[in-house]
Image (cartoon, rainbow, N blue to C red; front, side):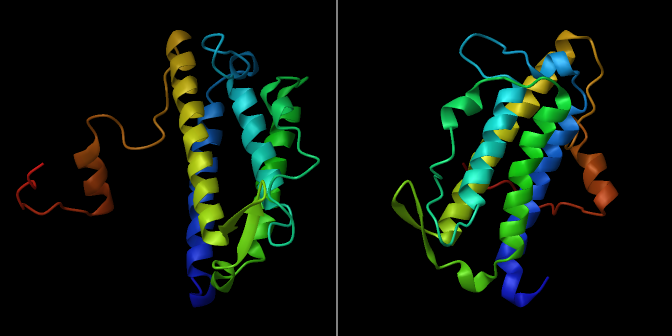
Length: 187
């Protein structure tokens, strides 16, 4: 990790981590499942993916020189499932990620204090990145949860994406980590 990009590289790693979680989750759901809404007031996985892709595309296209809410963005349309197939969904998803990755690759930690705007509101770049990664993480959590519910309903075996329930000790051992014997702090 280079000194002049240490924080940017940390953001890149976190975005990659959340993208990987979502993609490993959706691999476990068929095309029809990606389009299911759990109830009339929730979004399907496909719609959430479309929204993330659209948000990333808008926020990270020329972020240092133009407002993050682009005039060409149609946010309301991001909540309409109009995909003819899985490939078109993945194109919308990947398009946003490609723009984010290219934008981050062009930045250094020296840019973090620069002012940018989103919907006319000033933000430092580090605040915009923090908001973007948390927004993405929020929606990836929704994707993973919906995938788990759909897999359970279909009777499929869910491949756990993180530390399996009841598996913390085994996971820590695999990493070579041994928690200290210190007492738990008072709550």
